[in-house]
Image (tube, rainbow, N blue to C red; front, side, top):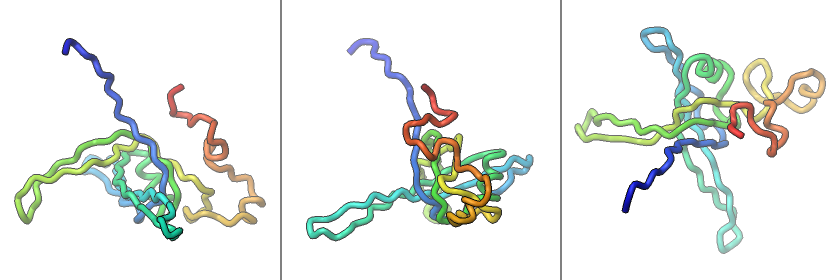
Length: 151
């Protein structure tokens, strides 16, 4: 078939809500690592007109300063945008001894898609109008590029 060169591209961008509170830990050397579980739900109507939900769960890991931010400011239910790459994690099951693996998101950026108050929860509209807090810079315009997005 010849010398076919296929470019390597491993990039994922999803939005969803945190399905659980972030799990912030530190390595023995003091590096922050945060594990998150994100649910992205597709809504549709079945043949009877009933609303159906199709949830899809993703595990993500982020490191260093963003890990600390996620652990301190985010909590279950917050809408987030996650950017990163897919990574295969492998381990041996302790009970059966069988090899196991799963795909996870090695996140490079996690951004909340709502407003943030001091407790890390979404504030109400009246409170937001009275102060000068701004949403994430790319959350207002779907056509505006994210600061880390390639042209």
